Image (tube, rainbow, N blue to C red; front, side, top):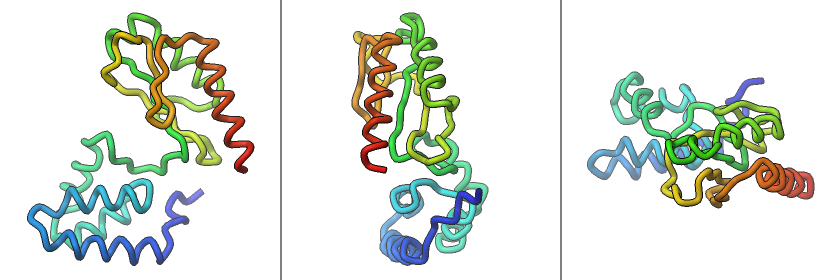
Length: 166
């Protein structure tokens, strides 16, 4: 499946408008990348090439920035993001079991998105809730003191909500 088939002309028009606004300020690259991520949900190579041409920056530089910062993605993300903390405190308290349980429950691995683009699974190194370790989040809502049963319950609720809106 071509990941870029949902980049429509309406989104491109909005993006070009934002680029033109960003050109008026010093250092337009980061605001433009944030706009691209917001508008398209990710920043594929085709969009990086547009940014390169419009801002007179190399594609290599743009790709380097996009792949360095965790809040940018080069692949489409799901409607929902599940993130598991694998930082030291969480790992010592069993976050690897949390990750394995989530992978089994939704059928994807860390860094992947479900085929229906509903859920993206990511890992992080620390979310600043070490006292609640192990922790994971669903759409930035933190779930602490995670156990296998708690993970299953939260993922089941997420799947049920997706089924209701489908």
